[in-house]
Image (cartoon, rainbow, N blue to C red; front, top):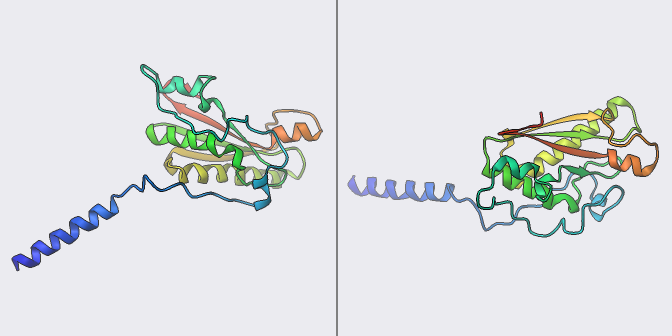
Length: 191
């Protein structure tokens, strides 16, 4: 009987050790939502050329976590992800920005994020509300897969109701097809 208890304790210890593995050496799986054709670029504003560079969001000596969110030199100040016309795939050029936000959220579990999905003016109100929601949800899924907790993030659609640019040209529409990130953490109360 004593041998059985020893064996059971060893098996239980191995099971717990296996379940607690974080997989820190595993690369994040790519997220693809909507059409695969959007991964090649397409319409809309592009991120700056350093968007795919590795990003370190660890605070420097004496850095305040809330200040990291508002520092214009920080990658965390990039708060918009742009989408192609009639699509909700997170484009490759914005993945490093989302990775920085996911890493920050993972290290600040008391922070909350709101993602607002937006569309251009074309299409019915109902269609644009649904498309804006799919865009916000695609960003949320990407952030969660990159390490943020699902409970930290809310995703809503504003449809075509909050345009960044009022014009009726492709350049205006491209600015309006986006998901915006807002934070609620410390002194930063954006929602």
